[in-house]
Image (tube, rainbow, N blue to C red):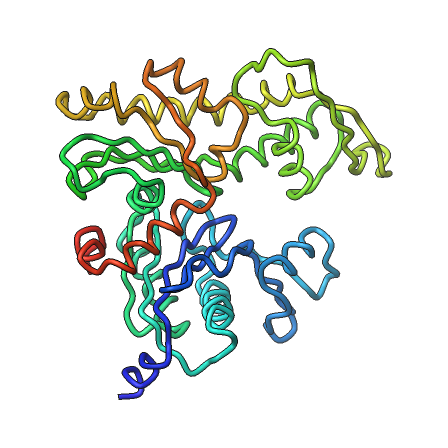
Amino acid sequence: MFARLGGMFSSDLAVDLGTANTLVFVHGEGIVLNEPSIVSIHQADGSVLAVGREAKAMLGRTPGNIVAIRPLKDGVIADFDIAQKMLQHFIARAHNRRWFVRPRVVVSVSSGITPVEKRAVRDAAAQAGAREVYLMEEPMAAAIGAGLPIEEPGGNMIVDIGGGTTEVAVISLSGIVHAKSVRVAGDEMNEVLAQHIRKHYNLLIGERRAEEIKIELGCAFPTGEPPRRMTVKGRDLIAGLPKTVEITDEEIREALREPIMTITETVRMVLERTPPEIAADMVDTGIVLTGGGALLRGIDRLLRQETSLPVTVAENPLSCVALGVGKALDELNLLRKVALPD
């Protein structure tokens, strides 16, 4: 009775529960929240000090009694309790801090999720206040959000490069024909860049600084433009003192070669395992890129060269998954077709 009563006062939600960012779509309103998936915790009593942007600002800068945690790792929940608190906070914010709400919630998950990981997401959403929880695979959500005609018999390929995982899928008739998820994406690129700076300059930099380098200089394919440079500050591993170095976009492109080639090989593998009739469709429909990794300079040109298929970046790649789960939330017939079984 209380669940039904709470449902009367709530708006249903769709959640893009990402490793790097969480987006919340409210029925009838659109995307109302886009925050980093980070929680700051006081170690003494486990109380939540900050969630989202405020918590991200604390990354690498907290005193010993405070820790900034990413509750998701490689696209799945790594810390159940913290993930539940984060979801609870975001659901309450989406409902303007009204706690007496029991919304229906649709959550996007990796296509490579295991039954145990699936149960963890359902339980976290239920304990955060959801009265019903539906799960939807990220590549399907991204395809819907990008406006692909998923219900038609023609083949459509989606490559969603997120923070923790890269999801590659071929979709036809509201179903996934073949998909592969690899745990190589934006976070892996940040880690590779931090290791490169450490190895070549004996300079220690944090996660946030590595991400800034990727955004500023990251490139997957030679652009033919004049070289770009960036000043990087960190701690000298030998002297232990603050130090500044200058890096170029060319060396960053070389440092990113391995994770980018892993993504490229995954795309080729999915294409090789796609039925020939559907593969033939993709000569015309091509590949659509979504997720934050789609914004990496030259990634579309590299995939075009490697696959000989047309490659386009979705109009709003960062929001495609959230828009897709939101559309499924608005259209119950579509939700029933694409939601994962219990």
